[in-house]
Length: 446
Image (cartoon, rainbow, N blue to C red; front, side, top):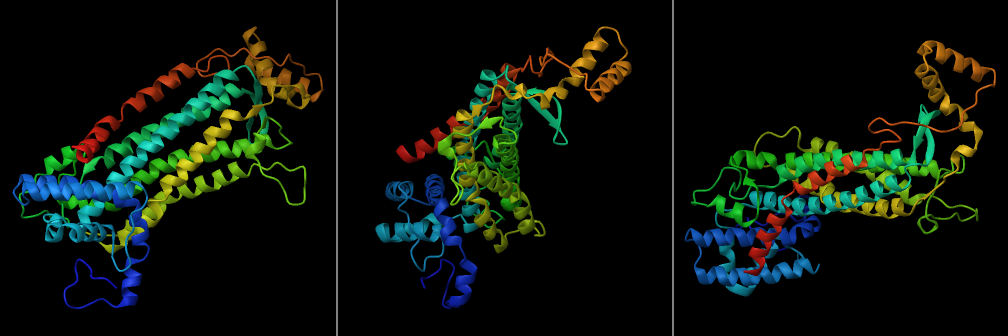
């Protein structure tokens, strides 16, 4: 068992060490390159306030860039006996540069270090999620426009209700993603604030330049109050999780629709053959396993905010080790959601639409409201028209041309997809990803 950063003369019991470290070393691999990036900003600031020489900063930055490359290539390893990513980075620096490597922790605690790592990690993952949501949105809008004239039944209570269209169906999920993007905007703004300099939650006696590290890392602002910076641990993860859950809710519902509509009893859509799986005993089967798994994964993601809340909800202010467990459920969630978004984009872009659903007369009665409205438009009181059509249905005399003439905003004949696209484009432009990228490039390349 290796020496801990905080150990003095007494070494901790091995079983206690195993229990307290838990899966933290495994989870910290997610954070490795962000830990390095944060350290680069921190030591640049330390040099500016006289706690490092220019030569020391030069040597440390060069070695940190090397470690960053190792992490980027997926080769970063936390060695046996090393407690966490922070300890591993410091160990690597000290091996290469000697005692200079021990200076990078001045004015910093592992508490604000992990806060920063989590924010940098989350910020980049949110950028990926925004991109994947945008990709799926454009697939859905394209399909909506392409299939705007293909009618399908709409349901209430899973009973045939009124005419809908594939234009409406695809477009509904596209607009749902717009609202999800608004949630992502709020989550990103909350994430993109700098906690570095809060140390263990009560600041530092060193004259830290927190504005400088905020600027160097491309944050919108800092978490100003050092106690609140620590209180944000868990709160950020919970609120980010709510934004991920919102997207997951949209995808889960869409996946359920796709499964339902592709079964033979509906036959509204056909999933691409290469996206279905077979049965070990039934040679005819083409199962929508991908969307079933997507539904399950997205439902699991929708439970994430509650899981985070239950871990951190009854904690007072200050740092507690409970928060370590949040990493285990939070960090892998992005990859799982991104997987679901990407596979959904692929399938929804290739799904085959049945253009002849209404040839089957079992869908005839969904035009009953169309007939009631036609009679009312010609002057018959609505209640009388409703009764007449109801009696015609009961008598088996109801007929209809199976056509609709909807013109109001958002209806079958006026999807407003251009308006929905404008909302999404406006939301996408509101993220300051370019500022963040430039700041990170400046740290890595100057």
